[in-house]
Each structure stands twice: as structure tokens, then as C-alpha cells.
Image 1: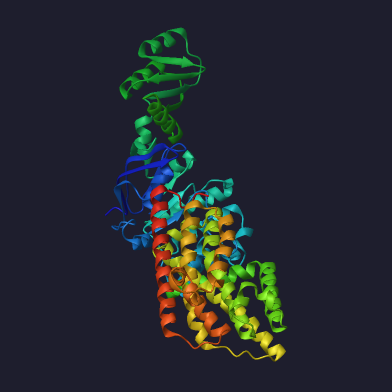
Image 2 (image 1 turned 180 degrees about the vertical axis):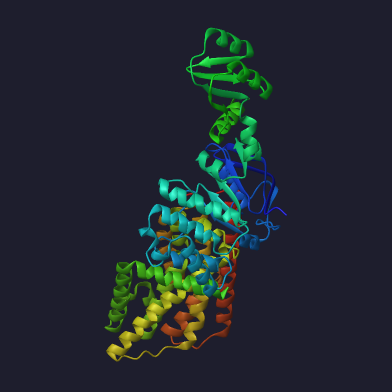
Length: 307
Length: 257
């Protein structure tokens, strides 16, 4: 059974005579151990969707199920959900990490002693034990973010919502947070990740959903999506000069020689013909063009704008 | 639910400790006021002076005034701060729901304030050797006034949740509280008395005046009215707060400031 089922969510906001259709028919599914990267430009409806999943915004239409329970009807569904929300401190800066863990653990339904025990374990795991008694406001941004993630896990939820978890972190802290997310997913945690760092999304996600103006414009396994957007373009590098006859032959096959590289757009069979034409020059490199998530994202967002 | 009250009490205590100057200032103010009262400075009790000339009446009146002010404003100030600092949404993610969490926070805060006041009072009594002759019967109407004050606290909390900035309105509310606690509706007659008693906290405040200032006997009918008034206003406050939670969830306004 999927940990998260969000089905046909709609949300319209009305303010000062204006109507904004923030989310239109968004559906998401996340299985155990899966990281779903939920991507979109600013104002596309990501945060509204995430907050509808978390029970913080009521959808106008559609339904949400977290581990089989609807957080909008059954408050105890929130027991299965942990969230780190963007633009929020998420934790009390005037409490220590352990005090925060205990407080939010009890708020999630744990006994204080149990919350403290789990809190100690999480501090150990997140490498924050040395800071257990320091005030949270004195921690580095990276440590504060790790603490926010630890707090969101104190009640061992089935679903973790991470809204921009690497935003504002330095390279080292971002790497630590990424490693933690990977570990959590490997242990079976279902994670919805929103981020503007597309390389982070590409590294961490099993699946990607891209939202534009409130609608999902693409949803697929990350690898499949990348393959779909990767062109049939090959780049070949050879040692030595190409003579005129060889250039002519390559041109006839649809390949073009550019600055010591040969670029060919076509299928695998055509590629073999190109390689044949290059014989006996030593081949240094043959590489198929592979799209990255940034390329896919921009293509989809721009296509959608043009449409 | 007791767990939540306990953890809220611990959180309030820790937060208080983390603002040492504010805590020291608060302790000094409470000590000075009680000490002033013991020395005969009647005016220092402010609106509490309405509860009579005797020292015990002044002390009860002052404690009530402090707790009522706290009960009415604390939730709203807390909500405004949390919306600004970005912890409000995490509180809303508790399966207990915001109304129960904030109720627990109110109870914890009240216990803390009460503990602080009573400790200092006890210390001054010990140091000065003065003994107070409390009328324990006064505790019952005092509790009903606090129920009403928490009802108003939740009403204002609903406004704070929706509008996020209601500081000016909260300051103004001190005068409303003064009017509700100081007006002697119990000594008026006819429809004005009835209308006055329909307002929050007025029957309980009236009974306190009767007991402490005028030395009258405990009136069970008036107490029943005060209790019903307290419960009804608390219920109204909680209901309106619940509606406000639904509205802010509908309009996506929980985190915004």
C-alpha cells in the first residue's frame, strides 16, 4: 500500500477580488522507501500541495491519505507524518536540541521519557550529541536543519515532507543532509522532497513530479524521465585528422565534424555506420547525450509556457 | 493530555529561564507590588483596589488582575510570536490539534504564574511576619473569572490567528478587562444588572466584591451564575478558535505573517 496517496487535489485562493487557482487536479503517490522529488518554479503550487498533504491547508476538492488515514478528517493521521517546512524555523531556538526533541515528541503523542530516549538516539545518529545542551540559536544553519529533520522523525512517521531541505546550507552541510536523506530512504522512509536544487533532486529521487501553474506536467521514474529527454545524439572523439573524403562520407551519413569532435544524431544502427566510416582512426570517446534534470525541467517549464 | 500540559509547563519554565533579565524583572515587579501592598500602598494594586480595603482583598484582587490579563493576552502574543518565528505550523502538525495544545499551554502558563506569585507572596509573609486571613470561598468565583478570561483569550487568539498582528487591539483590551472587572453590576438593578451579568467575568468579579469588599456571605446562586458564565464563555472562545483554525486552513493563512 502506498504511504501517500494524494488524489485530484484542487485549491483556489481568493483575496482582494482576485482568484488564484493554486493547484488544479494534482495527484501524487509515494511508496515506502521512495523519494519523490516534487519540482516546480516559484508560485507553481508546490508548497500549497505539500501543505494540503500535511493537513495545513484544506483542499477544495480531492483527498489525501497518509498511511491509509486522511489528515483532514482524522487528526491522528498526523502521527504518520513529519515535516520540515521551508521559510520556517521549525524548532524553538531558545530550547536545546534535546529539549526540542522531547517537546515535539510529546506533541506527536509520545511519552516524555520515550521522546527523550529517541531524541538521544537521533542526536547520536545526526552527529549532534556534542550540541545536545547548546541553545539551538547558537548552532550553525546546517546543524539547525539537521535538528529540524531529527525533530520531524522523532515519532517515526511513515511519510516525511522535506520542503527545500538544503536551502541556505553550505556545501558540506548540504552533503550531510543529502546523505541523511539517502540513508532514511534506504531504511524504508517515504519522502516527498521539494527543492530548487535540481542536481540534489536528481541525485536523491527515485521519481520526479514537475508542477507548473498548479498542474503536474510530468511524472515518472527519475531515470526514465531523463532517458526520455535525452536526445539521440552521439558525440565521438577520435585521434588524428579527418581528411576531406572522410568528412564527405560522414556528412552523407548525417554526422558533422566540429572542432575535433564528430556529432551524430540518429539511431544505434546509424552510429555503427559512422564508426565504420571512421575506421581505422583510434576512437578516444563515444558518448550518448544524456539530459540532466535541469535540462528536463527547463524544457518542460518552457514548453508549457509556450503552449 | 496531561503529558502535553506537563511538557508545556517544562517548555514555559525553560523559556522563562532563557530570558534571565525578563525573569528577574518580573520577579522584582511582583515582589515590589506585594511588598507595597503589605506596606499599605493601596493604589499599587490598580483596578484590584475595587475588591476592598483589607490586605487579603487587595492581594486576591491583584492576583486576579494579573492572572486575568495573562489569561487574555498570553495565547494571542504566543500565536503572533510563533507565526513570526516559524514554529506555528509545527504546533498545528500535532495530532492533538491546536485548540488542545494551546489549552494545555494556557493551563501550564497559569500554573507557572500562580506558582511565581504564591511563592513570592509566601516569602514576603515569612519575612514580614504578616499573616493573611484568606477567605477560601473567594477561590471559587476567582476560578470562574479565569474561565471567562480564557474564553476571551481564545476569542482574541482566533483574531491573532487570522490577522497575525493585533498588538494595538490587545493593548486596548486592558481597558475592556478593567470595565468588566470593576463595574459593580451586582449592585445595580433591573435590565442593566441582567445585561451586565451576561458579559464575561462579571458575575464572578461581582461575587468577589461581595465576599471581600463588603464581607457578605457566599451566595450559591450567584456562584452558579458565575460558573455557568465562565463555562459558556470558555466554550464560546474554544468554538470560535476552532472556527478560526478551519478558516485559516481554508485560506492557507497559518504560516503567513
